[in-house]
Length: 254
Image 1: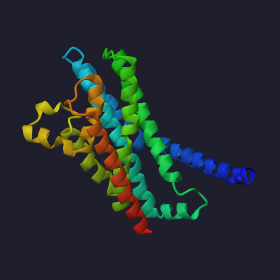
Image 2 (image 1 turned 120 degrees about the horizontal axis):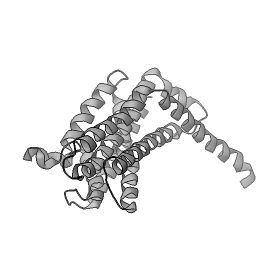
Image 3 (image 1 turned 120 degrees about the vertical axis):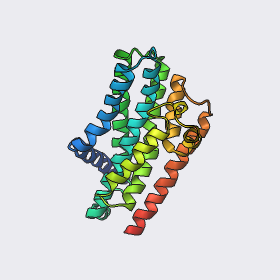
Image 4 (image 1 turned 90 degrees about the vertical axis):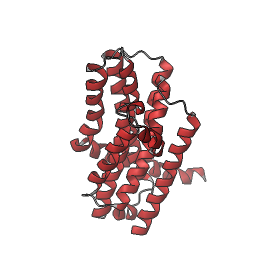
């Protein structure tokens, strides 16, 4: 029985690998995705966390956490939102369903790419922080920050997937930017919330980015003191909610 089942399992595994390879090549051939997603958080950190840091390394530590979150959010939103919108508009999603490919292969491949870009962003920022900004963290802190960034991309993959299931390819980038940039600012990823008006600090927990930022800030000691479980629960709930909504939307569109 196991001998008969082996070819099917092997074929299924190869389908996932091939889909991941295709997705990787597609992303690497899209400088409009790669350069901003990696370049913006790195440039912002070099400017504000290294060159303009007058706080004896405190700004460098704070911004290491928040610009890491900012970068991985962009990787999730744009890695899913724009590509899904374009594929849906061109009918490529229908074509994928007609091919002998596991139904979750495309989704898992894009999740893997988003997590890969999140890992790259996290590692590049860590190298700059340790070498140019003089940030000194314990090995366990570096590891926790890396894990938070890599896993933290998933809720924003789900949001991007939902946006891509609703709007067309031409509208997706504009809509995602309208969500991405204000959310990052209002979540304290560019400036500490203590520097913003009180009402903005009060409503900050309504933004998903706030919870990812707080998890990262907790590692470097600059969080607001809320329990980790609350942030993890909110992000897990958002991931599940938007994946379900996107799945229903895409199924209805078929």
